[in-house]
Length: 493
Image 1 (spheres, one colour):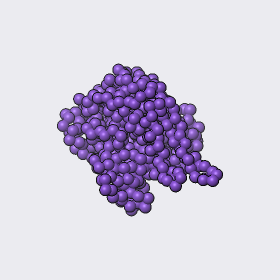
Image 2 (cartoon, rainbow, N blue to C red):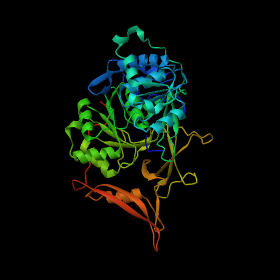
Image 3 (cartoon, rainbow, N blue to C red):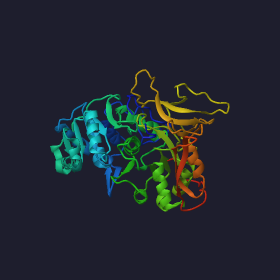
Image 4 (cartoon, rainbow, N blue to C red):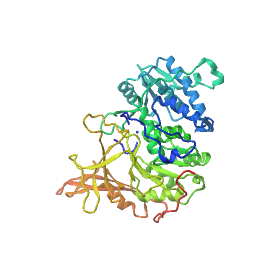
């Protein structure tokens, strides 16, 4: 399992937070108890969001109303290709409006979308198509030969068939949404496959709603005035929540790009679209800081908060990113199996250097290598493997009580926050002593001349065989320790 990336088991959606219920443009009551595509279209109409921008792609803005209209027409096309309730539709598409409308079209028909990285190899694509029993694969023409033996639809064909309403008119009436429950499968994502073939994780219509309620609302306080940009792509759980679920459920907007965002593109998109919430991973933030330095840059003036996930965020890097953006950096952790984040810093409660506290309705435990819960020590802290249970957690194992072993090591502090200590298999035996490479990296990273560092154990031989830690360091361009700067208000206004 990878640190931070959303899950399968069906659950009822959470109620909206008190903050969101007080806002006149936000819905009240349970988020979804029916087809999520139909629910989102009705929600946009009821809350007056239909004319507001939902997605920015290139120099084009797509309103919430346009997105749902195109999705209904795309559903007609998919139905014409034989897609029906219960079928699985594989999406190997880059981030863009076509990805969004095809996903919603499949949902409207009661089908399950299979989300895959379009940059994977033909072998990986064939495996996922076969493993998921896909009834149809949708991709660009360049990937058609990756799906031999599977009915295929080119994205260009779908785009032409679901073009502007004036072109289609009554030729593409939107089919009525398929009745579903909160437990009906909505989409499938694949784990990273670091220990073998990737494993499928299924999410329900209720899961995606809970993802927005518990993270988008309770953690980030997202509202219609927000504009999000996620470096993580839509086929990842992290990106799916950030750039799909959050904007459509909140009436806000997200910036989509098929390109891999580097520092220059991030600068451009954030400044052009006045991004308020930036989601990225530590390695991308490090590249941004390295390129831009640590002085606050005017193009980030609109950012009220930055979210970091996917890997551990070194505290020194977090400080440098906060100084560059002039905004707080909120670290969190989650997984494909868990839904989105299950432990997070929030816009109200941010403790730098930690993963924050459990997301509402999620429970966390620290266990030893035998699976027993670790009790707090005399200093009030505890260390062990992180286990999680919550409304969107999929374990796939009967009799486990809903608990998922994350394979991440963590320490619970006296104040209830958690610190990430690495993966459970990251420990090395050096000279008879258990050593954490991450802890060695943290010490080396404190040197002002070190920008990045990686530590790995290398087997030794001779009179005293064992392992010796070896490090790789990249020198920093500017010596000196970064300092924390005061940020702007983190809550939406």
